[in-house]
Every structure is written in C-alpha cells, then in structure tokens.
Length: 350
Ligand SMILES: Cc1ncc(COP(=O)(O)O)c(C=O)c1O
Image (cartoon, rainbow, N blue to C red; front, side, top):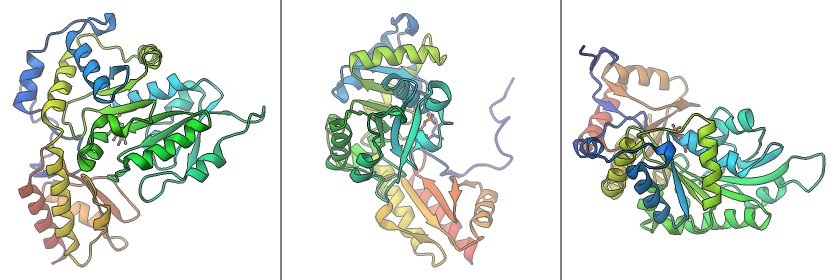
C-alpha cells in the first residue's frame, strides 16, 4: 500500500516554519539508523544506546545519561527523580514544564509547582527565587527543585546568568534541573563548550528531535544515582524501549553532524526577521532574534487572516497568541525558503 501522501494536506507544503520539530531525517542519518548495532535497552545491552548515553554524559561532564522518548518524558523523569509527593518545583511561569507538559509532575507525582515571573530574557529573578522558597513549616509544601530553561522562546541565557540562578537555588537546598530542549542552540550561539553551561546544574535534558533533526528522542544527564532513579521512572512511565539503538544512532549522527550547522538556522532567522521588519504592518523585535525563533506582531485581528493567506500558499506558521505569531527556522529551511516566506508576506499587505 502506498501511504506516503495519505495524510498530507491537499496543497503542497512549500515552507514549514511551525517548529524545528518538523524536520525529516537526511540520508546520512537514515543510513546510520539502518546500520546501528542493536540490543534490548531494557536489559541495558543496546550498544548504540549505551554509546549515545556515554557520549552525552561526557559532553555535559555528568556521570551518566538516559535516552528517553521525548522532551516531556525527560523533564518528567527529572522532576519525579528529584522530588517526592508533597514537594514543590520552582519554575518560570512561561517555561515548558509549567505550561506545556500537562502538569505531569503534579498529576503523576503529587509534586506542586511554584511559578516565578519569567523575564523578557528568559530568566527568573533571584529575589523571587528566594521569596518563593518555603520555610520549613508543616503548612507548606517542601521546596525541592528549581527548573530552568535555555533557550526560552529563542532567548539565550549565558553561563553567568544560569550560574546565578542555579547557585541561589543550591544555596537554599534545591536541586537544579535545566530544560535544555534547545541547549545546543544556546551553545552554538555562545560558542562555548557544552559542559560550561551546565556546570552549576544537577540535571539537564537535551532534545534530539528539535534543531538536531532526529525523528524522536531526548537525553537526560546527571549523577549516577539520579539517572538510576530516572531509569526506574522511565519504566514506570512506559518509556522503556527495546531496540532503541535505531533512535540512538540518529542521535549520535545528529551530535556529530548537526550542531555547528545550527548557526545557519540562526542566520536564517535574522534574515527572515530583517525582511519582515521592512513590512510596515509587521513588527519584529530584532534584539529578540537570538537563535532560531522569530516572533512577528500584527495589528489586532490581522494574524488569523495572515495565517490563512499563507496556508493557502503552502506556508505553515507556528503558534500564535496576543497578535504574535512564532516562526522557527531549522535544517529543512534554507535561505530561499526564508526569502519566499518574506515575499509572500509582503504580497499579503499589497
Ligand atoms: C523548551 C521545551 N522543553 C520541552 C519540550 C518538550 O519536548 P517534546 O515535544 O519532545 O515532548 C519542548 C517542546 O517543544 C520545548 O519547547
């Protein structure tokens, strides 16, 4: 049965800027997957998984790592490994773990969230971390963990900014997790060694299926004890996969081939932002285009019409809220795609 085109929209997608998760594995990645040595990872004997886990642990200078199926599962394994029922996680009120992961830590683990105001640069304030940490009092949940995010909506936090927040949490007895779904974008932008940015962090989650371009998978890193607990949680969540080396091989390929090229995504995002900013009825804050995301703002009521117009042209846009639409560049989006997007956007206003 030929099902290749069964579920595609009835128009041809020309440019897809919904997210960096829409990429297709390239031939090199597929070949790596096809030829990966495999075993049963629940028994711990898949050589490709073991190799990837060691590679990522080494990259971040942590003792161990664990391949899981998604960023959400990785963050959830982290939260449930750091925290027990009746404890709480301090995190940004716009961070993914708080708004976009179905409240997993609370639903499944009896763990509360204490949201902190996310700042424009993607950080949370030291004063607010201190203020929100609960005193040891039977009326309160026990503050146990601080969960940070980098990049956040394309914004990069540098080593010092991360360190300040992490140290504040640590000084107050919290475990520190970093949702680094797009940490490789931050690392590419800052041109630093990966281990530097997570020096002050206890656990870090890295997504392989965003800018790195694999079909699935995330890797959680931390201490040996932490990863042992996370492995148990992964099993509990139904996330123990068998011949997972087929995915691990894609991850190994991605880390070897797709990190440096992220600079192209960042250049394309700026190219797109500059062209769109030339259109008088679109507003773009160019300072906020730091990695692969561009947020474009419209006058009231225009965004849905713009989306509809672009979709008719085979151009897909990311999520929108309050008249702002998110556009994300990635490895299946070239300069020409960005230029096509900008010229169709211009034609909408003509
Ligand atoms: C910052 C961040 N963290 C975590 C995730 C969750 O990743 P996944 O979709 O693989 O569950 C996402 C997904 O977009 C994300 O943007």
